[in-house]
Amino acid sequence: MGAVHRALVLLKLMAKQGSLSVTEAARALDVNPSTAQRLLATLAADGFAQQGERKRYEPGPEFLRPGMVRPVPPLKTAVRPFLERLFENVHETVHLATLVGTEIHHVDGIEATSRALRFGLRTGVRLPAHTTSAGKATLAELPRDEVNARYGVALSGVRGREPDIDLDKIHKDLEQTRLQRIGVNFEESEAGVAAFAVSLGVINGERAAFSIAMPFARYAQGDVDRFAAHLLAAAQETREALGDA
Image 1 (cartoon, rainbow, N blue to C red):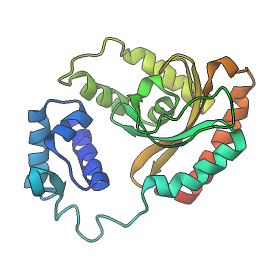
Image 2: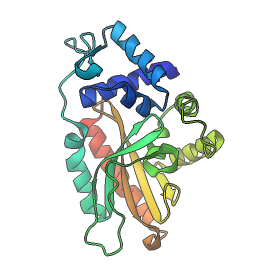
Image 3: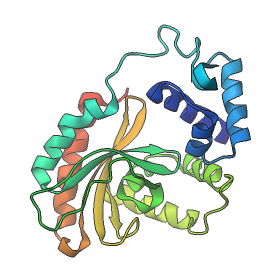
Image 4: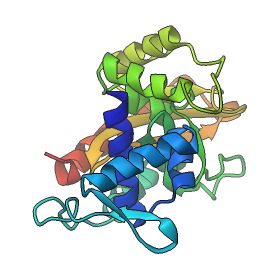
């Protein structure tokens, strides 16, 4: 299961970026370059990848066959109107994030610039999924075995084991997320942040989430219910309009 997941991650990255180097693949999977090279070579041997300029790997003929790929707008473009609507409703910093392996990638956001004390944009920032509200929201929709497989890949990477990863705690957090229907993060990913998120499911082949972030100093007890209502409404609207079948 781990090898299949890694191969699919590489295919998604090639489709999104157009091409992929061995170094980029190793970094995305958190494995050593030789492992990434073997995975890419296997995809190339089966026609799903091919080497282009500067020995970078790009989608191969099998991946590009008619019916295999359908033209879709980039995730940021497709989801942006719904993100803007969420921002107008909550007047706090909001982000669109995607789950890649065991990381959350913040791919778009709108900052609440009208507030003197606000949470800044994290667009482009990658964080461990289990410490973030968006990560909890997206991981909570996955079967337990897939969560274990994703963290098994992360823990076997060349960068070594991460002592702060506690799978039992992760599963407890995910169960709580399923019960309350949103992910929450009170200073887990970084000091001074209170964040709330909801999964959007799979859109354009990517598992995505909306999040709301604010300074913890301004957080009040009623914010959870208020933000949860807006997040769940935004997620339903986005899923109905864009969610994959």
